[in-house]
Length: 338
Image (cartoon, rainbow, N blue to C red; front, side, top):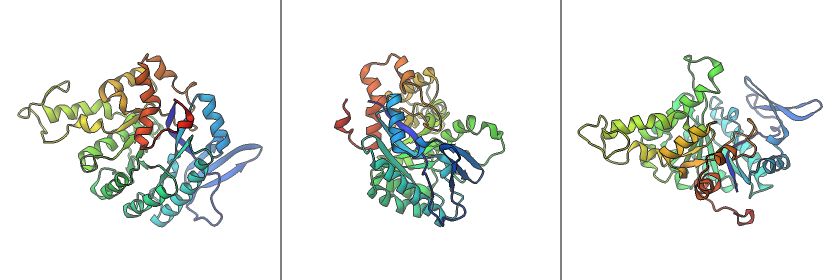
């Protein structure tokens, strides 16, 4: 079995009479694809983005048993007026639930919420759960604000209470320090780092110990910088026993690395050496397969690089599917086999 825990969808259409700030999906002459128009976004969406039959065919071709489907990041538009953001979320969530209901063992839906209004976002989680959505996708920042800020804590606490996992997708924050060409590359690494660090330093990880959070692209540079936070906390190198008198930021409670090992990270780091580092530092039980499909093409088969590491069979099975169902908080369908 193999579960792709980072895959995307787009609704095929938006209802007539939608607010002017809503996306549009326009037909393309002579093509089954549709054109997403949303602000500055112009994106050709292949049929696989919104057609369940095409998705299952693509999964079979790549050796994927099940997908965790989240809305394409351009739909995480926290700059919309809160009421419009809620309307957009409800339309996308309804489409996601309907799409996933066509193959519930293979398509696992996550919804979105209007994080620009934390109270509305929190209130919407229960309705999402009741319509069959397993989890929720949020961006790595909310209009430039860190997700670890105190005002977002009730949202995370409610997700924990409802047993809903959260997928944090890196999105650029307002900055002029890097060119726009770096948005899809280096900015992803910066955003993942800040998002994961903010959940620790802002206290969310401590206050919501049962919360299950995964990060796109292995939280960017976070795995490389968290050992520095560990040194400041412990006063020692190599995760040796702490020496509080030497530490620069000693406090009682879990260490930075212990908090980091509560999170999940997708495997979309593009290099077997990076995967080995993640396994060594964070543990194989923290990794999920991710592909960004169909926005990006999968490897064929989807676990090609993972298999090239020569991992023991139980470790490979954890990364390719056991960890995903632990993160999701659901049992794997018996009908899909081992």
